[in-house]
Image (cartoon, helix red, strand yellow):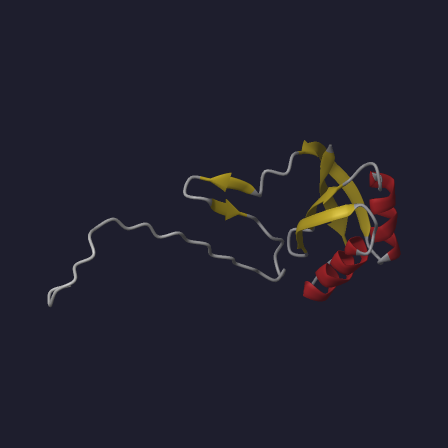
Amino acid sequence: MDKMLDLKIEGMHCQSCEKIISEDLMDTKGVKMIHHIDAKSGTAMLVIDPAKVNSKTILETIKKSGYKAKIVKETDYEDETEKEKPGNVITKITPKGSPLRITLNSKVYAEGKVLENEKG
Protein backbone atom coordinates (compact mmCIF):
# COMPACT_ATOMS: atom_id res chain seq x y z
CA MET A 1 0.00 0.00 0.00
CA ASP A 2 1.21 3.51 -0.81
CA LYS A 3 2.27 5.92 1.94
CA MET A 4 1.34 9.57 2.41
CA LEU A 5 4.20 11.61 3.87
CA ASP A 6 3.61 14.93 5.64
CA LEU A 7 6.88 16.85 5.77
CA LYS A 8 8.24 19.94 7.48
CA ILE A 9 10.88 21.58 5.29
CA GLU A 10 13.28 24.29 6.50
CA GLY A 11 14.89 26.88 4.25
CA MET A 12 12.19 27.45 1.65
CA HIS A 13 11.24 31.08 1.04
CA CYS A 14 9.73 31.31 -2.45
CA GLN A 15 8.09 29.50 -5.36
CA SER A 16 11.49 28.71 -6.84
CA CYS A 17 12.31 26.73 -3.71
CA GLU A 18 9.03 24.83 -4.09
CA LYS A 19 9.80 24.11 -7.75
CA ILE A 20 13.34 22.87 -7.06
CA ILE A 21 12.13 20.41 -4.43
CA SER A 22 9.15 19.34 -6.52
CA GLU A 23 11.26 18.60 -9.60
CA ASP A 24 13.88 16.69 -7.60
CA LEU A 25 11.21 14.62 -5.85
CA MET A 26 9.36 13.84 -9.09
CA ASP A 27 12.66 12.58 -10.54
CA THR A 28 12.89 10.13 -7.64
CA LYS A 29 11.68 6.64 -8.52
CA GLY A 30 8.73 5.69 -6.33
CA VAL A 31 7.31 9.18 -5.81
CA LYS A 32 3.79 8.85 -7.17
CA MET A 33 2.24 12.26 -6.46
CA ILE A 34 3.06 15.55 -4.79
CA HIS A 35 -0.07 16.98 -3.21
CA HIS A 36 1.58 20.23 -2.25
CA ILE A 37 4.82 21.97 -1.37
CA ASP A 38 4.35 25.31 0.35
CA ALA A 39 7.26 27.64 1.11
CA LYS A 40 5.14 29.92 3.25
CA SER A 41 4.17 27.20 5.75
CA GLY A 42 7.30 25.11 5.16
CA THR A 43 5.25 22.00 4.52
CA ALA A 44 4.92 19.34 1.87
CA MET A 45 2.69 16.35 1.31
CA LEU A 46 3.45 13.54 -1.12
CA VAL A 47 2.55 9.95 -1.92
CA ILE A 48 5.23 7.28 -2.34
CA ASP A 49 5.34 3.62 -3.25
CA PRO A 50 7.31 2.08 -0.33
CA ALA A 51 8.28 -0.89 -2.52
CA LYS A 52 10.33 1.52 -4.68
CA VAL A 53 11.43 4.28 -2.30
CA ASN A 54 11.68 4.79 1.45
CA SER A 55 11.28 7.89 3.58
CA LYS A 56 15.04 8.10 4.19
CA THR A 57 15.61 8.49 0.43
CA ILE A 58 12.99 11.26 0.31
CA LEU A 59 14.75 13.16 3.09
CA GLU A 60 18.13 12.69 1.36
CA THR A 61 16.69 13.97 -1.93
CA ILE A 62 15.42 17.13 -0.23
CA LYS A 63 18.79 17.57 1.50
CA LYS A 64 20.57 17.31 -1.89
CA SER A 65 18.20 20.04 -3.12
CA GLY A 66 19.61 22.30 -0.39
CA TYR A 67 16.91 22.04 2.29
CA LYS A 68 16.38 20.26 5.58
CA ALA A 69 13.28 18.14 6.05
CA LYS A 70 11.71 15.88 8.63
CA ILE A 71 8.72 13.59 8.46
CA VAL A 72 5.87 14.85 10.61
CA LYS A 73 3.45 12.03 9.78
CA GLU A 74 3.42 8.90 7.66
CA THR A 75 0.11 7.21 6.90
CA ASP A 76 -1.26 4.54 4.58
CA TYR A 77 -2.70 6.01 1.41
CA GLU A 78 -5.41 4.40 -0.66
CA ASP A 79 -5.97 6.04 -4.02
CA GLU A 80 -9.64 6.95 -4.12
CA THR A 81 -9.18 9.95 -6.38
CA GLU A 82 -10.42 8.09 -9.42
CA LYS A 83 -13.67 6.24 -9.08
CA GLU A 84 -16.90 5.99 -10.96
CA LYS A 85 -19.79 8.00 -9.57
CA PRO A 86 -23.49 8.05 -10.47
CA GLY A 87 -24.09 9.18 -14.02
CA ASN A 88 -20.80 7.66 -15.25
CA VAL A 89 -18.76 10.65 -14.09
CA ILE A 90 -15.16 9.83 -13.25
CA THR A 91 -13.39 12.28 -10.96
CA LYS A 92 -9.61 12.42 -10.76
CA ILE A 93 -7.71 14.85 -8.57
CA THR A 94 -4.51 16.07 -10.20
CA PRO A 95 -1.56 17.69 -8.47
CA LYS A 96 -1.37 21.47 -8.54
CA GLY A 97 0.16 22.72 -11.77
CA SER A 98 -0.47 19.48 -13.68
CA PRO A 99 -2.19 19.49 -17.07
CA LEU A 100 -5.89 18.78 -16.95
CA ARG A 101 -7.57 16.46 -19.42
CA ILE A 102 -11.35 16.20 -19.60
CA THR A 103 -13.19 13.57 -21.61
CA LEU A 104 -16.92 13.90 -21.97
CA ASN A 105 -18.97 10.92 -23.07
CA SER A 106 -22.71 11.06 -23.50
CA LYS A 107 -25.50 8.84 -24.74
CA VAL A 108 -28.83 10.26 -25.80
CA TYR A 109 -31.93 8.10 -25.92
CA ALA A 110 -35.26 9.21 -27.35
CA GLU A 111 -38.61 7.61 -27.85
CA GLY A 112 -41.39 8.67 -30.17
CA LYS A 113 -43.02 8.24 -33.54
CA VAL A 114 -41.74 9.31 -36.92
CA LEU A 115 -44.46 11.18 -38.81
CA GLU A 116 -44.50 11.32 -42.57
CA ASN A 117 -46.71 14.31 -43.24
CA GLU A 118 -46.32 18.08 -43.30
CA LYS A 119 -46.15 18.20 -39.48
CA GLY A 120 -43.40 15.68 -39.11
